[in-house]
Length: 277
Image 1 (cartoon, one colour):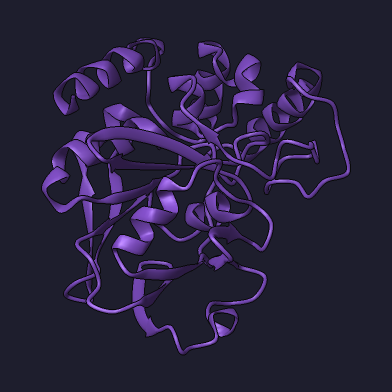
Image 2 (tube, helix red, strand yellow):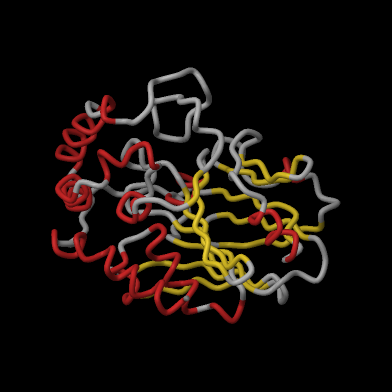
């Protein structure tokens, strides 16, 4: 097992995909994000990460964003379609390093990166139906024209790095190791909808979440390590904080994680955070 990480150097307008076997034990999402922050701290990175369940299991529909905010390690989570686009782009994390010399749009298509001047119409970038667009509207950055983060430090970091917007397109497919068992488990988890800590609504939903809840628009800060390593929202913690459920999902997708690997994850994250602080 390995994690595929796309490094985007904003200053040099270069990019590179690297694969890390040593990141596998962090499973995904915020746990991988914290480790990448530790390993790249000198570059003041912004790190987007998804978990192994994004794009394939319901209620796992957030993207983890990790950054340093004036010396404080911050982890926040945004909904919309970004996590599923990343899941079908072939990368587990995107690490934005350095700062662009002038305001720039970053267009990512699978594992390729294009740097565009902000005179470009950002809505013309990417492939409609398979893209997520993160762009500023007034003083906030909106994903898919609706979803946003709860604080302004993400916007401040993007502005500092001269990132005017990000468009991500994912067109790859994902092979399921055991399709029949996957379908069975998928329906089982959909049947746990009553465990979600909110009622169904008619608001726009994050991808692969049937809830349409009123809290889907504004993202989250902090929370349960297991849930946010998958990456589910805090409202799904009764589902994705259960080690047995996580183990079953990972196994049916072909991962070889053990119960102990999952149980040990919070301790691994604690050790990383101690080094960061």
